[in-house]
Length: 486
Ligand code: ADP
Ligand code: MG
Image (tube, rainbow, N blue to C red; front, top):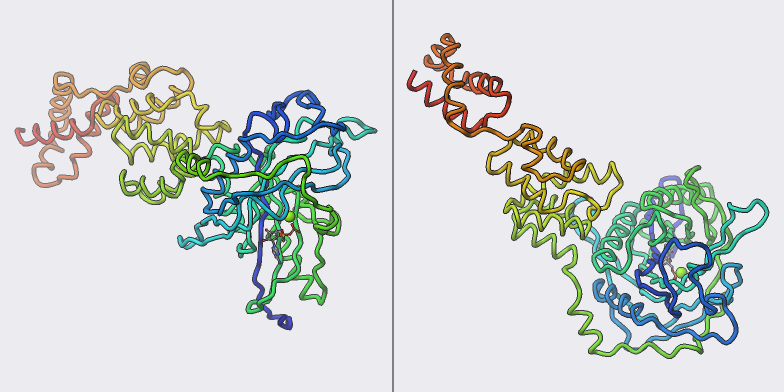
């Protein structure tokens, strides 16, 4: 039963996402041609990609292995037998006239992904299905003033489509869900997870309903979302638009909208086609996909430690705060980097601190992936060890690290070059401490009368005279001893 809407009706947002992930297989889904991104137009094609008569598809086994990996990692059931279907439509970048996809028998179904809400609690987002697909080619509209150009390199590259249940309740939850998907595909090394470059793509379905109403409202589907932020923004915009429309007495119509990232608004693309418009039918040229139990077991055994489990281990075994563990496990390679440095230096917390501040900043500023960083884990471990063994001060870590980025010298070479090695040598420090004490008789008297706060003053003077090279801990011990004797 739908609820009558008045000016004070509260609405609830309902969102379901369809995410396409481009798989990192070496070759295409049904033909042995390179699936790599970025080749010269129409150089990575075969007669099959061109839809020539008489060509026959042959299934790439890695497509099946990759989708089973994510199916298992997201708690899906894996169908022992599933079939491919043709999704028919006409478009210049689809010479075959159909995409090979899966329709009523997806290979994975009924799983879930956990997201973490703002209050720290977790929520299960249901997965309707994950199925296999091939991509279409690309129409290029902005290179020739008169014609649309077609590049078929992408035609036939393998995709998976992950369809969520309408379980998301806010644009923020949609954002978190996408972040989880990105993490999962990266951990599994089945997709590079880059939405800006199109290897993850998302269509967002959204509707609203009065709080308390059982039935869902009519949804719209937003396309052209090329970043996680844009998904969140577009959904927030669309929720507001639907709300105004309904409050003004109008009705939401089911349609596909395009997000305009420059004008920050959605606009109409076309009214939504229905499944029957695609005239799906079973692909006659491919046999059913049979997943044997032994294949399932083999893939299960090969799965890496997933982010949630790894985070928990960082907290329990390495004693990291939850917050650090979450940030570090967001990216598999950042977590790998952290774990290496932490193992080598034996200093989990210090390592986490340095990575989450200095290293993250450098990666952001220079748009680098952690795997591209010139300072390798062994090199950072040495820097941290220099600090924990008091050979350098904590304030020297940053300048040494910056220099290492430029030169690829080791941490101790760099500390030496920048003259930042702390001196813990008695024979060097002794005379300086002596001099500071004899130069400041008034302070010595006041200290002896009980002004213990003057310790900072003495240590400061020694640090100044040693040009910052003294080890402050050691200086303060020496000063304390000397003052006793004085
Ligand atoms: P289609 O086949 O037209 O793409 P589906 O039924 O497969 O439609 O649903 C596509 C997506 O839309 C799914 O992620 C689903 O959760 C979501 N969805 C379905 N109904 C609604 C609704 N009323 N509001 C928001 N999202 C919805
Ligand atoms: Mg769909």
